[in-house]
Amino acid sequence: MAITISPRQNLILRTIIIAVLYFTISELGGMWGWRILYPIRLFVTFLHEFGHAFGAIISGGAVEHIRIDPNAGGLTMTRGGNAAIIIMGGYIGSALFGNILFYIGAAKPKWVKPTLAIVITLMLLTGFIWYNSLFTTLILCAFSALLFYLGFKTKFGRDALMLLGLASIIYILQDTGSGPSSDLRAFEREMRFIPATVWMLLWLAVALGLLAFNFRLLFKREKTAKAGEI
Image 1 (cartoon, one colour):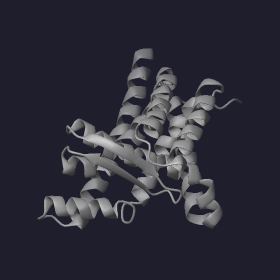
Image 2 (tube, helix red, strand yellow; image 1 turned 180 degrees about the vertical axis):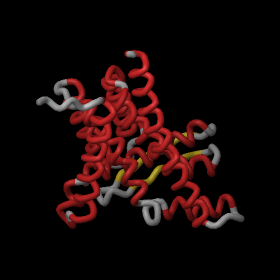
Image 3 (cartoon, one colour; image 1 turned 90 degrees about the horizontal axis):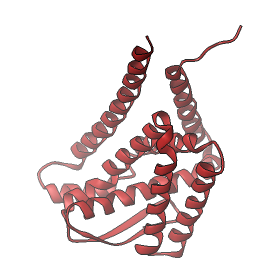
């Protein structure tokens, strides 16, 4: 007797598998786990630094350069713009971008190739227009080539977006206490009266809220599709 899995069950199953694998490798894998997840950490760093750059651009500033370090750290130098938006753009921006990638991979198969094309373009522009180091440019070129291959030469484009999106979200949630510490200190200085711990909790709440909203959209979409079939 064949077992039929609904799209919702399939989505939940794939999400659980990705989450469990990521947590298992990151928490129990030790140094090997760090090495296995190294490319994803670099991608998350790119999203984080691009979030700073995006914050600068939308607030009227400009980007000097973006750097991704071999230890998966990063730095974005900007000029002008609103400092609070630029600082907040790293954590909140990467949470937003990760949720968008996951949603498109899970629910919008026709958008997968255009989305990958946009991500690849942004990576290449970052590597060459906002050039800072050879390592940064080589990493972004290598990632662009890998995403192009997966998205346009194989059938794993959706899985790649889901993996990168969900892993990015999980990573920044894990990294709340340590990863954005420099951003939190800078934001505390900028806002003056509210301590970094409060901002950390607020940023975490925003990231979790975006993830909850994402799943609500996904399940509401399936429910609407089922109602249309009746």
